[in-house]
Image (cartoon, rainbow, N blue to C red; front, side):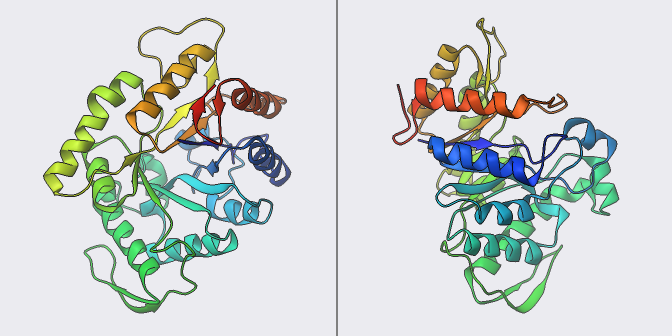
Length: 305
C-alpha cells in the first residue's frame, strides 16, 4: 500500500515556493504521491471552501515535475466537464512526459453548480458529459491519431503526440460516491477514489456497491484508492468520524483496515475546506506528516510500524 499527500494549491499560504517546499519535504519523507485539487471559477460557494488564490492543477503539476525526481504527481480530482477532453488529454500527456511517467489522473463529474454556470456547462448533464469526456481522453492517449464520436464531443483525425510515457495512459482514479460515479470507475477507471468518508460507509456500502456494479457491467472491479483526512486529536473521536481523523491509534487502525481491504494507494489529506490556513499551518501539517512516517507507517512497504 502506497501513501500520498493532498497538498493545498489554494488559500493565503499557497505560492510557488510553498508548493515546492511541500512536495520536496514529502518526497524526502518517502511519500509516493503529491496531489492537488481542481477548480476554475471561484464562485462564492467554491471560494468559501477553497479560498483564492487557487493555482490551476495542470500548470502546478507541470511546475512541480521540474522540482522533483521520484514522487508521483496527481490531481484529486480534475473536473471532467470543465475542459474540452482533447485539451485535457494533451495537458495530462505533456505532464506525464515532463515527469517521465509520474502522473496520476484523478477525475470526477464535479459538484459546484454556480461554477458550471460561469463556464456555461450544463450542470444536470455533468454525469453523461464526464463519461463521454473520459472515454475521449483515453482515446487520445491510446493512439498518435485519434477520432471520437459522441453526443457531447466528436472529433476526427486529431494528432495527439506526444503520447504519455505510461501506456496506454496515466492511471485513472475516478472520484465520486454516486452510482453514476461507481459505473464510471468500473467502465473507465483503474481505481475508485472515494474521498472523506467514514470507514463503516466504505466497508458496508461503498465497496459492496462497487463490486455489485462491476458484476452488473461484466467488468473487473477496480482498485479502491481512497483519499482520507489526516487530523490527529488527543482524544478518541466517536461514531461517524471520517477515516483518518482521531488519535494516532485510531488512524493506525484505519490504515490497517484499508491495508486488509486491499487498498493499493491511500492519499492523506491534511486540508479542511472552509478552514482558514493561518500563518504557520503549512509547517504544522508537514511536521505531522513527517511524524506519521516515523511513528505510524513504513512508507517503503506500506506496513504499520
